[in-house]
Image 1 (cartoon, rainbow, N blue to C red):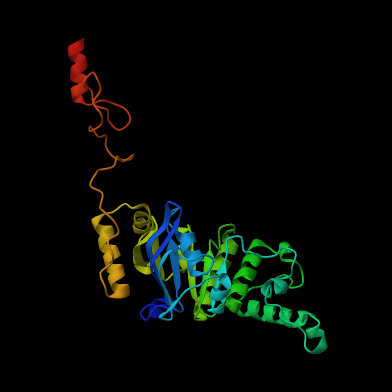
Image 2 (image 1 turned 90 degrees about the horizontal axis):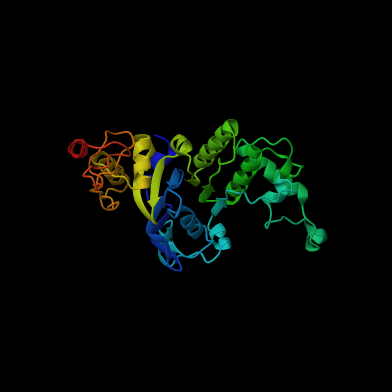
Length: 325
C-alpha cells in the first residue's frame, strides 16, 4: 500500500463541503465536496464544464465561494486572496506554468519572495542572487529535477524542465497541498514520465497533491484516489487500484449501471465508512447504440413504415409497400 493510500484512512488535510459558486445565472458548483489527505495524490476529474477549475480556484484562494465550508486540518478557513492560501501552505501549478520566460529558474523560484543581501546593501534593496540560486538548485536536486543550466532564462529549457521548475517552485513553498492543473498536457512521452515520477516524489515528502487532468492513463498511473465532478457536484469517489476505465468514464458522463453503482458505493464506503451520496437519477430510457442491433422503435412514417437505427425498415413497412403494389 502506498503512502497516499495509508494516509487516506486518517482525517482529511483539506476538506471542502457543500461548495456553491454561481456566475450570474450559471451555477458552476452546486454543493461540491472534496477531500485530500496528507501524503496522497488525488485526481480530480470530470468533463468540460464539470467545475474542476472553479473548485481549484476556490481552494487555492483565487475566488471566494458563495456558500459551503473549507477546512484545513479540521479548522474552518476562508481564503480572500491567493496570498492567504499560500501562507497556509497551499500552492498551485497552473496549466500555463506562470513562469517569467526571461528570468532564470532561481529568479522564478523567488518571484515575489526575493532574498535581500545582508547589511547596508540589503537595506538599500540589493538582492542576494547567490543565496537564491543555491536554494533553487538544492530544491531541484531534492526532487530529482535536472536542468541544463540554472543561470539561463527558462525560455531556453525544454518543456519538461520548465514543468519541473514550476513544480519545484510550488513544492518549495507548499507545506500542505499542491494543485497541479494538467501538468502533462503539452509534454511528450519521456517528459510525461518524468513529471509523473516527480509527482510521486512530492507525495513521498508528505505533501498532498491534487492532480487535475483529462488524461486517464496519467490519472491511473500516479493517483491513489480519484474524485469525479459532474455538473458542479461530486458524484463519485474511487480507489484507483480498484476502478476500471469504463467506470471512470461512466461516472464522468452520467451513464449508470448496476455494476458501476456497486463499485461507487464500495469505494465510498471504504473511504469514509458512510454510504455515498446519490450520483443522480438513473436513466430509464434505452439509448440507441451505434454498435448494437437495429431497433424498430423510431417514429412511424406516413406509409406505415417505422424508421430503424439510421437506415432500413421493419416488416410492417415492407408489408404496407407490398399492398400498395
